[in-house]
Image (spheres, rainbow, N blue to C red):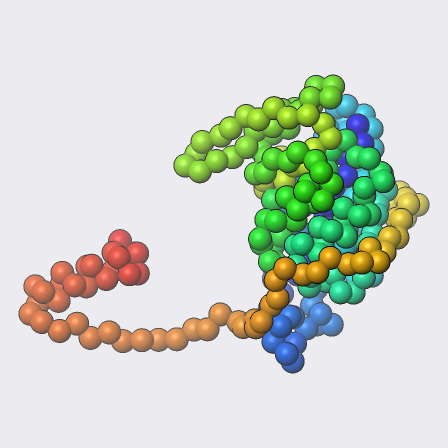
Length: 254
């Protein structure tokens, strides 16, 4: 089975965000990066499917040259080769533009299965995988907790609200967005790191007629902290009732 895994490079969670001069994105020259955690779970699921059914795992990523960092990490964990859609503008592009670039770069590969993480740790819209499926004309399912492959048939377990789950049967090829926690992540071994240096990374360019973005970041700002004092008037009993109401309904701490 031939599986593609779309991965994204995001800011490390420990890095304190610093905004650029226009307040529309972060100062990339000051940032440190890592693999998007939900995509790491998608990669792990692809590697497990390969161990069970054979085939190959190809990681695909869209972004500037620095994205090679997470591509090499994915190859060290066990992926066979990679596709890198290299373009500086994809670093802060919306899901529609990124999905169009990934779909265009992978279309001719004829993958049996395309996996993505449920969402990214930076923008978190959970749309890239869904749009990739639409661009490729493939069926898709989201929030996947288990994947079963039987020949040309696929059976997946979706996580719903309130602790409920749903089993869905669908044909291959298909696109799935993987929920974090579906499996136990593996880490790159020294042998894997050395082997990754010899694995192929095919460079691709965005389509000549790039997709138009569907959203625009107007302004970013660091969460603001402030202190406010609310005076509650009335008798002691009335003030107590109002205090309890505010703690319950407004602050939601009781």
